[in-house]
Length: 388
Length: 67
Image 1 (cartoon, rainbow over the protein chains, first blue to last red):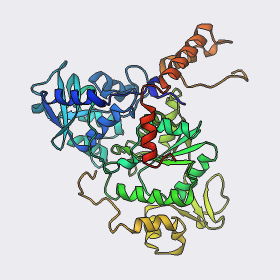
Image 2: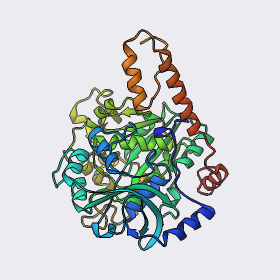
Image 3: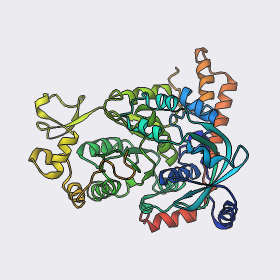
């Protein structure tokens, strides 16, 4: 089994008596109310999804990540994992102190405060997203963050309620699952979309050379126009039921928010899948990109900076449906002209789902289209709660 | 690189030490030892034991991931 990032799978989630004792101790601590997304990232920290991180980044760790793309221990790390808070909420807390973290009024974790420092929005956004343009959803998110950052180790004693608990596996669980299935090589697939034939082509191409496939959609706040979480999961269930061998593919969620940080996020996504036990990770065209902020293959090139990542990236170029080949192809496999090719654009996908024209309908499996059609409003609406 | 060279993932600092030694005809013994030790540590850290595997298997069965 592949070693977790940093060599050790973090486990800061308590159970049994220790959980009860921690919950009782937390009642005496100053309490910081956090969003559901932050609560899920506490869960990610505590259950090893973000190994070797065991807490929110200190100023030193954040500086390393922003400027060197590595943690102080020299492990590759490209995305800040920080906890923001209003200064007023931190008046009673300093280094050496502790906070209880609560979500919707319910305490679920504690944080041993290592440091408290001011958020430098410009530096944070420029280094993470490569831009300070407010039209970038990540930059907008940073603009809305509170003014202070709190660093320190977390301890989880109660997971927040999770409507997708049935799909929620920890790295310890996926590692046991992969081993029991006899998978020595596992390909991780990141997605924030419903599956079309192009995704299936990439997944099955990679699976041809590996023992198993871990389809791991990001479930959490997304931008307007993206598919809703429940739609993505239903669509994948339909695809896997009808078009994958049951013992060769696993569907499990990664509960976090999309950052839309393009190449940096691609490396982060690879690290997380390494922690889940994947040996390989699929990196597509414009991975985790948004608008025209990143070059189509920036997310491929960045991996050259991390030869020590410990998980093998599998780079896929753009693919399309070729009407003459009658299949999904790419630039290396199809000799036909542009006129014969149908791109998997958002417009085409919508046409396919609406059954608007017979060619587009070939881009999505009918069972997947039916699953999506059961939702009267499958897309995240602008202004919806949590929409980026 | 020799034909029988094996590419292995290394922690960052260690990787750079190996990279620095790459000009030499042979990897120095201390580098090879450090690599072996680091890999052994990683293997040990990755081995199950810190988690309750029976509990995990029970949950995986309950959720339908295992028969």
